[in-house]
Image (cartoon, rainbow, N blue to C red; front, side, top):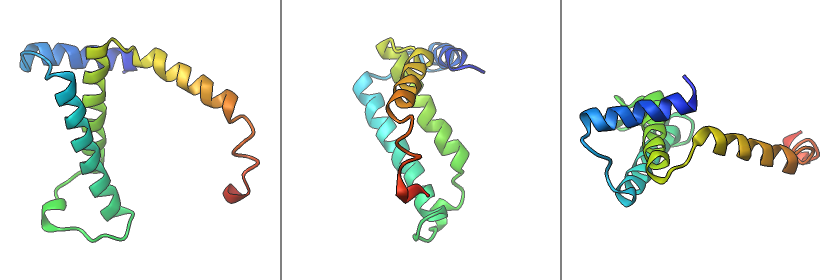
Length: 108
């Protein structure tokens, strides 16, 4: 599935099952919440924190998908084509960082 197809799937789902999009501000708040849930799982899986009982049923992939879902909602609401935006961002990073990371002694 492409980013374009995924954005369309989200839009169709929202219009079929969700009635309408939440407001942009509400979705931005939800995105922040979802990123926090992802961070919690990352901290417990790869960091120094231990799992709580309530964390054990959480799934890293599902939390990432939740973040992606809400991001796509926001993109749809604000008219952002994520395929185009991602390609432009990749081009920018490629030009800016063509040699930077290879020259970074911290990464060697």
